[in-house]
Image (tube, rainbow, N blue to C red; front, side, top):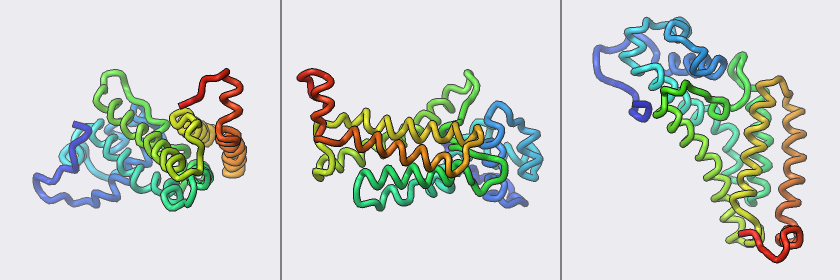
Length: 221
């Protein structure tokens, strides 16, 4: 199953598992699930297919593990300052700016964009699709929690639509990932991030009064 942990049974392996996983991550990130074959993985990881299956399970299991590896190794580079920022605004701005660096100038050769955002699998791998959906949901959960804390602390008006504001930030982040894969530079993406923050400021300004006026007497909750 794609949610099972690393396999440890069997004879001792004569390869560096972490290094092999890093190579698999790079390959999946660059080519995607469908575009990567077991033969491709075996060559990149430096192990035969029997050892690959013994160590990582199926191709779907390995893909899920590389997504976790990406989230923990590379995704953390974008999220580090988000968690330590003093305000929701600064948290989101740091996230977008740091993601710009990660997406367009990644340490891994020949890859760009967010591996989780760009992930796509075959129709028959329903369990893997759900796993990917869960990873993507984590981004929105983090954003919504930060906005809720900002509302509770008085930084943002309770009239602001928490879900819509968080979705806005998520959409910008995802769009930056796609643009990076299409060749956008760090400067391009940093510009997008700064313009997005103008949209954030407009959304939270005036305590939500401008939204109440544009939507009649109905407040946004």
